[in-house]
Amino acid sequence: MGTDRVYIFDTTLRDGEQSPGASMNTEEKLEIARQLVRLGVDVIEAGFPISSPGDFMSVRRIAEEVGDAAVVCALSRAVPADIESAADALKYAARPRIHTGIGVSESHLRDKLRISGDVALERAVAAVKLARTFVEDVEFYAEDAGRAEPEFLYRVIQEVIRAGATVVNIPDTTGYAYPERFGALIGGLVEHVDGIENVVISVHCHNDLGMATANALAGVAAGARQVECTINGIGERAGNTAMEEVVMALKARQDLFGIDTAINTKEITRASRMVSSITGINVQPNKAIVGANAFAHSSGIHQDGVLKERSTYEIIDPADVGVGGSSIILSARSGRHALRHRLEALGFELPDNEFEPIYEAFLDLADKKKEVYDEDLEALVGERERTLEELYHLERVQVVCGDPGIPTATVELVDRDGTHLIDSSHGTGPVDAVYKAINRIVDIENDLTEFSVKAVTRGIDALGEVTIRVRAANDRVFTGRGAHSDIIVASAKAYTNALNRLLESQSKNIEEEL
Image (cartoon, rainbow, N blue to C red; front, side, top):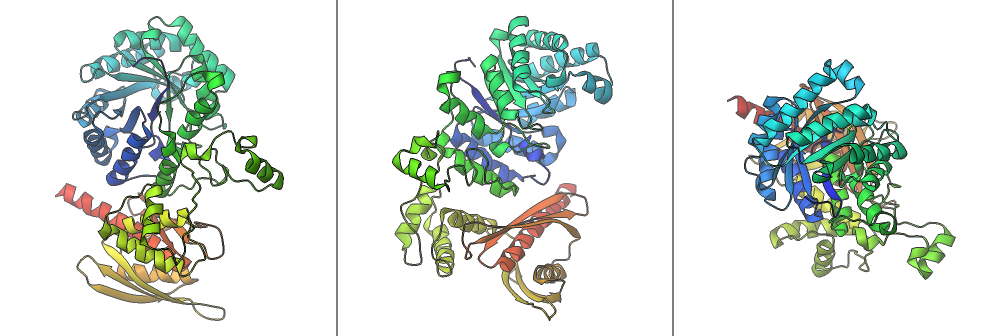
């Protein structure tokens, strides 16, 4: 690979998906993979093939679609069956990589694996050798390296390089490290491991103590040339190193690092919003680079400074990460040309047959609002995409509620055969009544585990977006989303979306059994 720049290894589709409730289906993973290609990431870790048939198929389809635009990587444990499954999933990849490894800390050896260091070393070497029989590019991960004894870590890395590893991944699996010590660990590898100059050192840091980005950058400063990260920093527990933070830190501080990435930074914001929308995990407003407030200024002093010279309070040009301000104010008086221009500026190129329904929805919203913002348009497009293939479509919902009074809802759904199904119910509130009415039509066992609502934009007339999660009888969790200017309608859309995904999953399982 060479070491003239930092390679970006994106694991949003593997480690990022391990965030509770963030599971994605194959089509959603493909959508994100396409955006990762637009971003210019070097490696896409597409999944853990042996973990499930769905993960296996996702890796295979991503490998087929990505072509030679990026390395496609599949995770495995240091187990022959895992490695063989990864190789099978990657057999159509133009640039395949198998990512295999084993725990190296005393905690993992003693309490999880229950084996000696010598046995772990034997398994590590055997795994790399087996992986090399399938692919030329093999990455080895030394799990929990952040808590490992350095001398043992050096020994393991030395042997896997001799066995044929091309990339060695030094993970701070539990987020235990801090920058000075983690940088020293990478520096120790550079100093003590023969042949380390012939492979790429990778760092994979978790954010349990809020230092994932700092630790990853300390690793780069010490000689690492690959950073493993996720969009928005999603991942296990407190998450992973955020891709956007590492990329922009290296770009903004060339004076300090003197090394950059090949990322097209103008695609960062689009990627962030896409991952947030698909996973249902909202980005906190003050999140670095991609948060809603990242380039917002409320202080009069700050506003005065920025208006005179942007760099007085901004070290990053918002345009560099795709947050360009729009000079077109969309309202009910805007025509098709203005709307299409703004959608294209946001990255949505829609054919006429897909544009017209968006335009009609836009007019309906614009009649209710003084101004339609970029976030409104993204929500409208997302809402349209969610209704393209449905088992049940929400046609109408009517609610009667108040105090005194019994909240009552009437719902009309249309199934794939075009049959209109109407039922009513009452509940403790309007949303409860709507969900009970839907349940009378769609009889599928589930528990509502999470309900959240947010305003997509500012103002009392803002478009509302509802995200819910339901747990099926088999304990799988499904996320549903819905957006509308009426929050009750948005809630009904979100619940219908979640049930459609649950039903689709059950249908696929039945087909596989047959």
